[in-house]
Length: 106
Image (cartoon, helix red, strand yellow):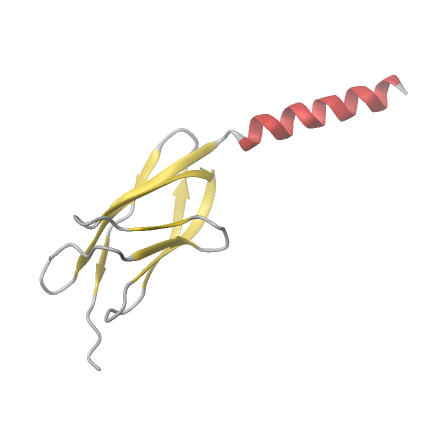
């Protein structure tokens, strides 16, 4: 019985320490043709609930992302959606991911 309790406690300790291993992404969303920052673009970490809107200067930050590899997507009305694949989030650090969205021709 002692071993079962010890194993349970070790599992809890390991899980709680691994959940604190998070990083962040930051960057700028801009128009590909003009280089003008895009405000209010939606930036999403696919497969998670992490997302944000870019600020007036096109910058964005998403914090608290568990360490791992992700696809990051940026989208804005009137522009083509852009994805960045295999972005590695490292615990305790910030990864820069910039987007240059192309205007739709419709």
